[in-house]
Image (cartoon, rainbow, N blue to C red; front, side):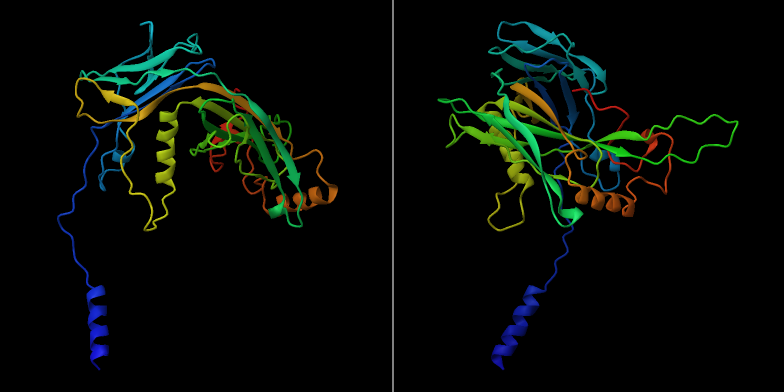
Length: 352
């Protein structure tokens, strides 16, 4: 009986609820966020300035971040030469198109806000780019359409005798088709049907690599496969940055926090400080990063039409019809107006 009472008492303790009435959040809306990058490839390069979002459950605009206009933004090299960035829209600054980073030079981002805050990044040397050794795809057959896919293969050749770090961006460009409506009766002219458009699916997770235990060897990039769920064109674009150790560590910390799973052994989330500081007010928090790195860009077509087994292709035709992937229920003369397509970027493939 005593054991039963003790167990009931323990359950009572575990089920207690306490109302917290004095909980406060720290408002970091005056912290400045900076992001920009430059490389050896042709510009223009862009730098974005804004304040962090202040938390307010009653004002949704607080989550968007307030841009910082009217700042004097420059990129300075070790010789003292400076390139001024023009404000092309509120809080977004851009270099002249003629400005291109030079390999081996050191660069620093300098910002002077209208309030007189003097912000600077650390000095970074523009390293030599590393070319991709391979970038290709291989079709993998299966019994079901849902399991048919293209495996992506990509690798780079690391140099021997140095510690090397890599930051890789992936961007996919996917063609989609719409169905044009029934033409108007004569003698009305038939409008031109723009049924082919492109979508650029958002991807904010970089691939981070280093040559630990792989010095001087070929390093494979872990790339997700491409589904064979349609026969429209699909391009995969990779941008490979040859970064320094500090830059790699910054993005690695970002990724570590993004992947927190709620386990008891997870790292404790903390504010990640970048490579920028406020020189005349060290207590003023500056977040974000200015990245200087040698860069290589490459784009490859994943051919989802040619070379596919006839039986697999027929399965796909039935799948496309069953899933209504041509949007027969929403015919449209101009696919650019297809607001239901996420990340619709229009008729042409973005410039490479």
